[in-house]
Length: 252
Ligand code: SF4
Image (cartoon, rainbow, N blue to C red; front, top):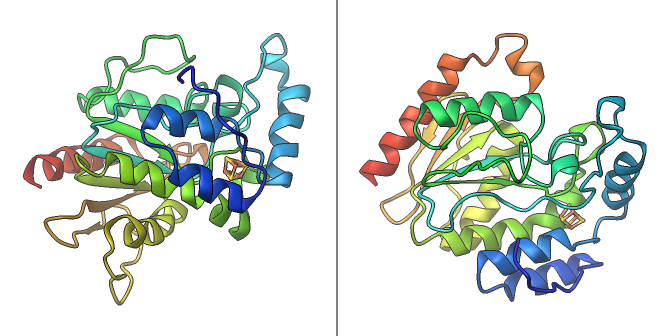
């Protein structure tokens, strides 16, 4: 994150005002990291950062909202749900330091979209290629379940992030149904396009293409332990989705 002192958002109105005024990703990242607009999530992220998991007892948790990660001229966006309590909320980088991230970054590396297969800390040298990862909700929620109000309060950050990367963006990979559904209001807000009717349903491998001026949407089961440990999402399934994303990004 940059050296810009961001004003902390304390209300949904603040989030909308501050997000719309961010003229580049560095400012947006700083504004996200300073946000305190959702009381339940602020309390949870800070409580987790204080109580910690035993394995990380010696670490200082980030305990704040987690900005997006990846280059500003990305052609592929990976849209997740929210940071993990002991992953992004601990390390300060999305999908970093947890089992979901282990699976995701290994796959991104195999696809040529990351310079290394692991993501353990903000200073580990990881760099993404042509790809930016963002969460629909930027604070770790209890039970990984943000409320609709929290999702909507955070939405202006998501919208602004996609507005800023829109010039190069060609594909959005939605990790799970929550991200898939969070895409539609973002899509209409950023591109001024009507919602498709009927609304395309989330499915692993589903592809929706609205037109040449808008990015394709690609569905992928979330890389949660619940999915990867049970075999619902395998490495080869994830590789298949990322290969399709690379192919769509080249074609659009
Ligand atoms: S979820 Fe989003 S809007 Fe709510 S406090 Fe976190 S960063 Fe702010």
